[in-house]
Image 1 (tube, rainbow, N blue to C red):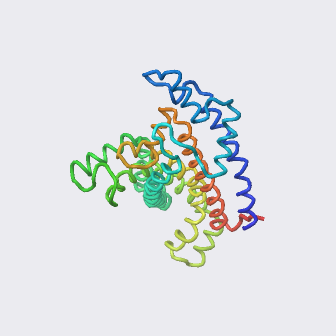
Image 2: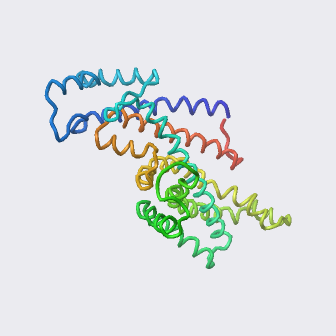
Image 3: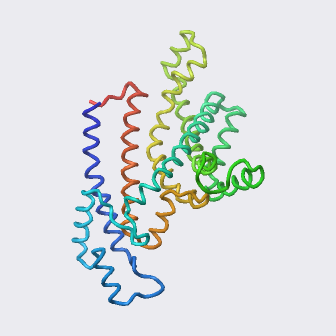
Length: 304
């Protein structure tokens, strides 16, 4: 296992190098720039700003300068906010991570439960109801579900605040909004995975030994049925981080989502690069954890 983890971590280096290179040149070569706005800057002021951020140098020198600073742990300075990108990410990332964690817990609780019900009660009203609800959840976008939850639970029943950040109540509605779509996919994957193993030899053996049906479901069927869900969780968690952009805008939470939107609109190059790099590292890390969990769920998988 240790050798496998080391190999995978070493394999992340060229992947990150490609991501950094492509992201930097795509952003820099795109039309427009961070200093183009409605009021044109005087040539002297523009030249001074470009010299400050190194944009007056050839593109390859800009890239080398960025990579050197990256190795020092410096993600650059935000052009719009005039603050260190490291500082902005340090302030916003814990909020976004907390939101993604709540969304993940909600998605797993709701999705796995619905998937188990659908698989155990196959072709019954329970199964059709669970899968219909999953399809509805997939079909409703977050920018529609969020305002609906606010209308119902904030403006009608006054259970949760409609926006802001500060207490556990502020995270409930955005967490449900962000996790519901993922819960719908997890429900369908759980049902499909459990139906694949329900007629396997080890399930028949477990039942032949007289094990209670609940024990067969939780110890044997669910463990094999969760393999498709585990494969999905890596990119799903990363999607929750990226998808929080819309949710954080709706509920006015101080995560990295609003910063990312503003950075993209204002061509804030270093802030965009910092958030892209953060999301990439997070996605690659989640995929590594998924591969490790796979071996625990399926004893047939080895890492030699």
